[in-house]
Length: 355
Image (cartoon, rainbow, N blue to C red; front, side):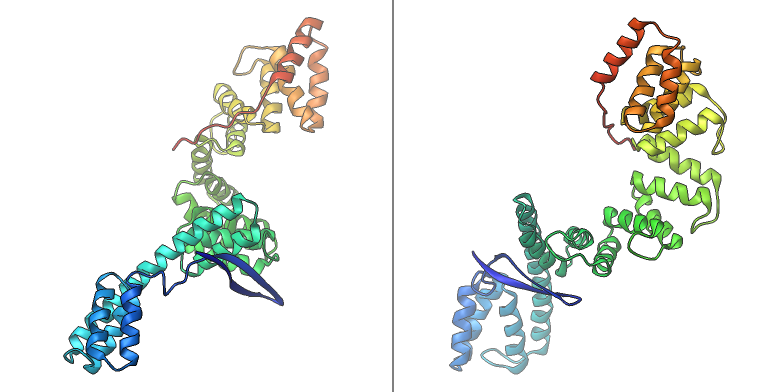
């Protein structure tokens, strides 16, 4: 292996030269020794000898040798003339070329991951780009992401969207989610709710929680899809069950106040709010504090109420600060001290996804 410049990318007016691990494609190819001997013999018009070497190289999987054999059979050079045999070798060459390109793309994708792990983002982008050009879907996503944020390459939103779409069309769920998010928010591109819903729908069909939540919001407000409260609630439930904190918050708040088409149920509200609060969702912490303070769906507990109000206040929620002070006036000094101890020791937890 050697390191050599291989990539010249034109992005608007910018030019990037990058380096990536490259093998000598001809000399490292399967059957390269016999291919080389065959090419020499062919140049010397020793067609029979050339055909013999080409056959050996072709049997070893060398696509270039297969292509040469196709020509030699078509012209009857060193072998009996046969269009049928020429066609067979052309087909085999096409298959071998695609397989070789796939292997090379996979190798360069791995090289990109290694380079990114070493924080050599310029080299990582070069390797990802090489693999992406070969059709590697995950590499196409990495190229899009790096173009989007300007990592290892100048930021270029237009090119990022193009590569996101190529990856998304191959089923890369994170590319579909990123496109949905960009179109829904109008981030760096014109807002387009219909496109957002389309990409969220593809990712949601693959079970992605972020996409399920994004599509739920679309159905809730009729953004890009017909307004459908029942479908919005169903999708929020799917995302919540996978551990999506905001979906858990919405579902908990819905049960708390009887919104989103669900029947008011304080016990269910507490269950979902706690799951979101445990992940650090500040509004869930605030609502859970309210439930403990009121004894709704759970036994009244001022220590727990103070704990959750305190955590939400620490996250910057002014309403929680007011509620914390109000509940503190109903507590003993020992209870306040216990609540503060619990808050100091609290750590957010990440829930595993549940399909």
